[in-house]
Length: 107
Image (cartoon, rainbow, N blue to C red):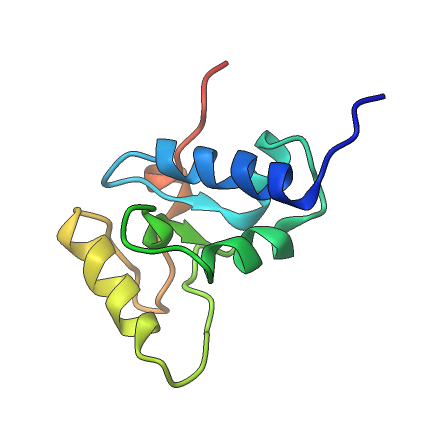
């Protein structure tokens, strides 16, 4: 069995995030599952907290199609702004219609 380090897991997850095209979103769970680590969606969030602007972190949302609250750092509003600038729409409750905007990686 292959020995997988935390750095390898993080790298796989971030590489997948970089594949999400503009105007589309994926969930934390989508990325974890595609990386081969289902039920590790929180690790995706941890990895995204440590990236710069070269990774399109704003395209990752929770399983309800909502922006995950991070606190008072202002990134919640920034994430919505960046997504709307790419054409992603939100409903009146602040959810993204995943049936329309969810990215599905084709293997």
